[in-house]
Image 1 (tube, one colour):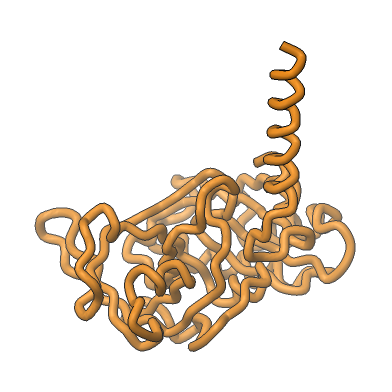
Image 2: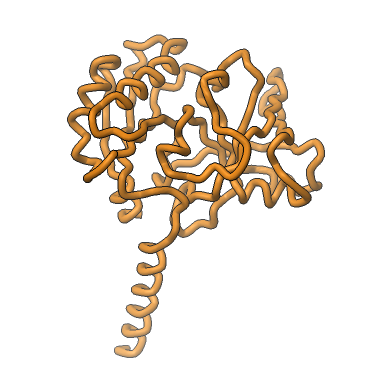
Length: 250
């Protein structure tokens, strides 16, 4: 019994050490994640995406903030979002291999997280409703769907999920380094990043504002960030978590 306990403890420590030092693909220490929820009865659906942009802009102006962006999914939070895709000139894959994870983000999200852009470009203010649909993908996505060459410039299609929907087509404009998506124990999945301002259902009432501290502990920015968001969205409910603490808890 003692030998069994010692072996089990050794395996636990080994696993814990591996997860604690895992390269997650972004900078964990300087990041503060702010979960922002809007009251549906206070903000009209058509105004919510623009309000998230204004919240990001207000936070970016807070002293001590080096960068800020927003997304619908916070990494390592356990939340996820996926979709089924088709690659017109890609390899033939079974349907269960054509379901990458997705995240809608605002420009500057990769810079805020410290995730390296390997080729192509990041999103910018031209990527909005009415403009050509674009995407950024990670290395795992490129390896699975474009094993014969560069992913940048290629096309991804999202077939209709329901009768009456249209097929969405995205041109890949950038390739980024792999980063943990949902959990530390899972391999980095093929990930499709899409511009939040091209999201076809603007009525979503919650988003994650991520803040990169210029120096010091990011939780020290909580008060200033809360006040900045309160100037543009006084009814928003806010929850603050340091990304390092979120990863440690995971």
